[in-house]
Image (cartoon, rainbow, N blue to C red):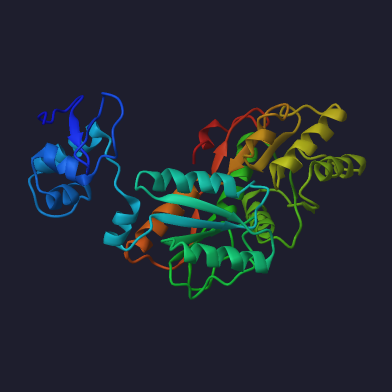
Length: 361
C-alpha cells in the first residue's frame, strides 16, 4: 500500500479499497482514524487535540489540527454529541414574522455561534400559543442546547411559557421571565443621544413625534427626551407610520406660535414622513429644521432625502451577546440572571448637522 502523504495520498476504506484523498480526486469520508495515522498519534490523542482537551504538547496539538485541515476532516456531529452530551444546535423562537427586529438579532447570533460549530434554527410563531407550543416541543425533541426568544417589542412576552424548560433560555428584544436572562437596547440612552444631537446642532425648540403611549419604549424615550432638552418639552403620540409623521408636521405648522427647529422622531418611518411633510411646506432639512430618527432601519433611513441621522439600537450586537450567553449556559457556565441594557449609537447622515462628535457613542 502506498505510504500516506500530505497531498494526493491514498487511504484504504473498510473494504481495503484505495481512494485518492485531499487534492487528488474522489475519496471516501475522512475519519478520525485517518487524521491520527497521518499525524502519527493515537486516535484518543487526535480526538483530544481537535477538541482542545487533554494534556499534550502544543506542537502535537497543532500538528493534528494542521493534518485535519489539510485532509478536510469534518467531525461527525452525532459522535461529537454523544461525547459532549450536546447537539450543537440552538433554537430561535420569534413572533416578529416581518423580521424587522429578529433578522439583525439572528445575524448577530449566527456570527457568534458559527465559529463554535453551532447551528441556529429559526421558528416563527406569529402570536399563536398553539403554534408556539408545537415549535418548542419540536426543539426539545431535537435536543437543542438552548433557546433564544426574540420578539417585536420589549414589553410583551411571547405567547408561550418558556420557564422550567430542561434547556437554558435567553430573551433578546422581548420581555423575559422575571428570573431569566434578558437582553434589550437602552432606549433612554438612545433618546439622550438623539436629543444631544439636536442640541449640538443649535436647536432650541425641539419636539418629539413618536408612537403609541402603550409601548414601554415610547414612554422611556419620551421621559429621557424631557430631561435632556433645555426648553419646554412637547410630545406628540401617534402610530408607527410615515403618515403620522406627515400629519404631525401639519399639526405643528398649522397652529400659531413658534415652529420647532428640531424634531426627534420615535422611529425612522415617522421621521421620513416628517421630512416629506417639511419639504412640502418649503422647510429645508437640516437648515431650517433638523430631524433625528430612531432604529437605523437602513432601507428607510438611507433612502430618505436628505438621508436620515438616526439612533441605531445595535441589534446585531445584541444578537452576538445573546449567542455568547446561550453558549455559555449550554456549556454549564454560570450566567447572572436579570435585564441587561445594551447601548445604542448615533448614525450621522445629513438630516441633522453638527453631530459628528456623537457618532459611535
